[in-house]
Image (tube, rainbow, N blue to C red; front, side, top):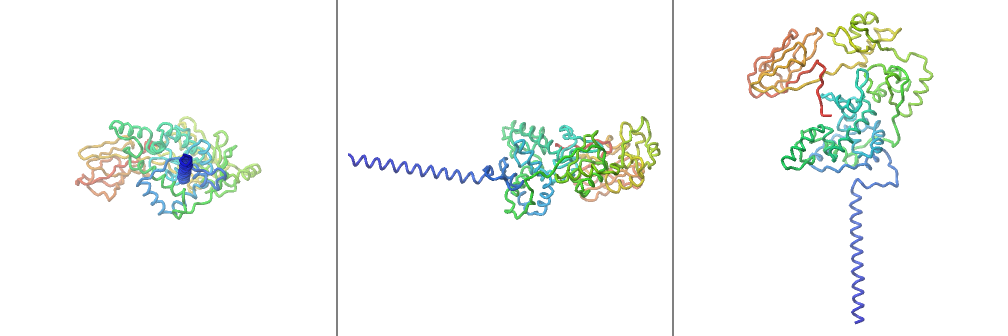
Amino acid sequence: MRLIRTLLLLLLVLLAGCAGINQQADQGANVQEARETSRTIDLTHPPADVWERIRRGFAIPNLNNDLSRQWTQYYASHPEAVQRMAQRASKYLYFIVDEINRRGLPTELALLPFIESAYKPTAQSSAQASGLWQFVPSTGERYNLKQDWWRDERLDPIASTNAALDYLSELFDMQGDWYLALASYNWGENAVQRAIAHNQSLGLPTDYQSLDLPAETRNYVPKLQAIKNIIADPAKYAITLPPVENTPYLAMVSEPTDMDVEVAAQLAEMPLDEFKALNPAYKRPVIGGKNDNSTLVLPKDRVEVFTRNFANYQGRLSSWRVYQPERGERIAAVAKKLGISEVGLRKLNGISPRTQVVTGQKLLVPAKGVNAKTLVAMASADGELPPVARPVRTFKAVRGRRIVHRRVIHHVRKVYHGRPARVAIRKEEHRKKIVVARAHKQIKHEHKIVVARVHKGAPRIGHIARRDDSHDVRVASASGNQARRPH
């Protein structure tokens, strides 16, 4: 009996030991698995730089599909392009990541401008989306990004970042899923909601990969995943990222008075191109002062230099002033009063040759005591006054139907017959319209376009004969109505 009891005790000890070994093995397996995820963060050591800070904040689940692998391979095969984007991003990353961390958002969002704008603050799409985060005018207004003749805050890296993160946060709250939130940012929240409702009506899954999305949106998250893969392990893809210290780079300075862009750059002791890169929102050669709530974005180490030089500056801060035309005052009369040419005044203020009287618009004019002719010539040559972008609309001409479009361009009537053709309309100096036909291949005399009041020598395109033509009809608008983009 004692022998049996002894054997039973030994058996129990052995079983307990095996259970402990299995438990340790299970715990070891769990620890090993956790180390392989991007969510394991060593908080005992501060991040070495902003790139490491981004890696530590990854929180969006990885998307492992064929598209993400294809885009990863694509970006990895263009290391110079990735490095250029990363170099441009280095000026803005600390501020963006800091704001993302403050809001508790995933740091993958700091990589979104790689996809949206290649981190070019002046990037503009054909749909009139602008800036690092590619806001269209309507969404910019919705998120309080000021857009007028003087400045466009969609191009402001500080203001646009705050607006974009507000927008993305709202989209995530609406969709409850980051893939769907990102798809909504690209395609529009209403469009994504309709796609979800369509799948629900068919009893289909409603996740990102199951929705019927346009090609751009279907590739949107895979592109972001590809950039994430490279940032997570750049050495694996033979890419060297530029150093980005984990310290603030940018600072904002309130401007107390009107000041020329060139003077502001001189006071900050910065190259003009570098100053403009940090302050791309200002569209004119002069920056409004405190009455316009204007601020300058400077490198942090330039703030003290700017403040000191501004206090000691004795010269003219601005060579420009704002002129408010009297009611009914004609452009020609304003130009004569100010001693500048009418053509120069129109160029400075983006006024079309047809407009004779300016109502309710302030004009940018040379300040008193300044050589007006020289200043106007310099501003035009320096590219300070970019031409107003002409919006583009796309129409499909279906065979057997007639499309008459009268509203886009005044006094011009266009009739399209047959299959789609691509037509661009540009303005000539003599206030006439000239039709320039372009397509994937040269359009000859197979299309019929009837246009009134065209410039002499404009191409006349005859009746369509072939059935296999397939081109887009693109008409540039002179009415000011802008083409729209989902975000």
